[in-house]
Figure 1 (tube, rainbow, N blue to C red):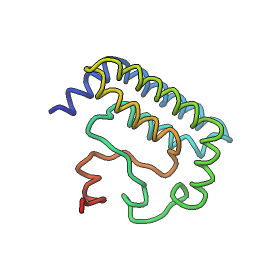
Figure 2 (cartoon, rainbow, N blue to C red):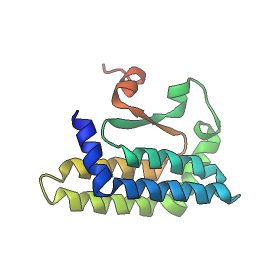
Figure 3 (tube, rainbow, N blue to C red):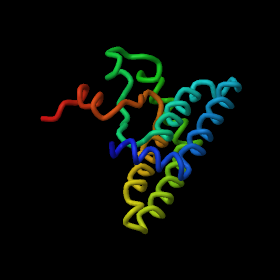
Length: 142
């Protein structure tokens, strides 16, 4: 219930615009030949930016049980290129947004979501968005 409430407030307070921005970026990447390998990552970030409460990110090969292009050595190359050309400044933007949220006590949960988004913007290739319950099935606590 708290995740739902957090997602509703996130959605109303700007999460929908962030998700739309990532969706449009993914569409632009898909149209261009050069950006096509990163379009899927932009769509994953868009999904995560739409409903970050109650969700987390895991490697796609842990989810499917098999490697694909994004979780292989090519995924590492893709993440390095993403980091150099886009990831670091997107991460800085989310960290600054998190710091702005942390100024007030009520903004702390939204600041944590910005930090989660900052982490995915560093290296999104080969990642998937799942609920926390699904993630616990793949990464059991010890």
